[in-house]
Length: 88
Image (cartoon, rainbow, N blue to C red; front, side, top):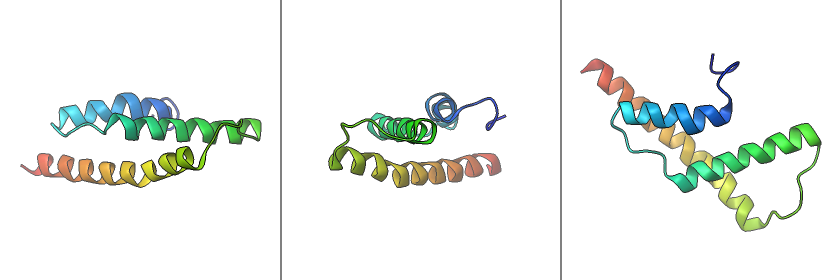
């Protein structure tokens, strides 16, 4: 289901906050989620159109790229919380 129905955007913006709230886990900060959304959009433009429109700066790119490990760390911590809640 996650790969065929729920797009990356849906997983990031709908399912992840829903799981976090259910587990009583702090939400992913909006600015990190926003950077991850933008990174996904840029990836899609590059993959489907073959180029990315101008307007990117080193600061913007570094923010988008640095959001990725923060997002992964967040997912790891949420996974730990889910496992803890299932065993208690």
